Length: 408
Image (cartoon, rainbow, N blue to C red; front, side):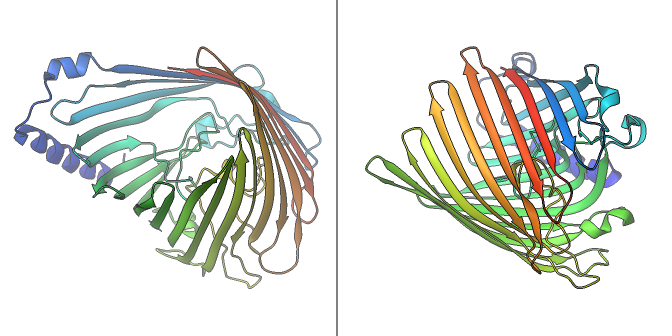
């Protein structure tokens, strides 16, 4: 961790330990019991990924195994600790794809598609947490999935998950509201590199009724390295999610609006909107959705587009991952999806149409397919595919995955 993040963590530890020591009520667990009678958590995921991209002559293939092993202590006067080790192992196809990493983690393969799952063994999370009543304070290295992960997420699809060094506090307000603040001293990315920053995140939600929630987010990203300054920005967002039951039907609606401007040492002018709207219907185990998402952009030189560098990007704009960075002219993504459940089997199909937000460019379209089967012993097996049909952005790309997960 950087000196500033270490200082913040030290302050947090002293504050939470002091709060615990002053607590009048004991939870009935001694310090030694809290340390030794905690909970072990483990997760395994094997995945084969194949990529056919017309920008490369050979295919890309990867066979990787992710192991996550963690331990969480019992609370002692509100204070607990959590540590998780993560290891990603290549199982024999490391020379058939680039891994997107830098430095010692780079597998050195060029001329093949990137599959961003480098071999790595690390402490993925290590934090202290103080929780009492409706207040939670934690600091160290942690994962953070905020809402739908459009702005901040752990990128759980990749084998090496994204984590953050910093501290955060969450507070319940009454029976229906919650607010939080996080200071982020670094982002530890899925490719294994660490991006130092001094960023601030404020968020809150209010349940208008049990099925309707309002939420808001303010995210100030300020990257330390000059080469990352183009990602520094200020984003303010607000949205609503809701559902309504009518007979056998369940109707769903989501809407979100945001605005982003440049911040910190960013030399690029950013002044762009974000808009997402989605409607859906579900009857039994069959569901359908349709939506549109707009990330602002410009055709003017020196202007930037709306970016979300801390998001779980694989969830958005197609599983072929052609829009991990928003094009300069922005992005308009319209989609429809159809899902169905048949016992333990779940099926999903999604179609996307991608266009520029500024100008009239048609980037391409994409079909995505997913089939999952849940086994009784907490294991899931799945097959997944993405077929991107390029028009004016990138090249035709087909991706296919076979994977299985298990954990306790």
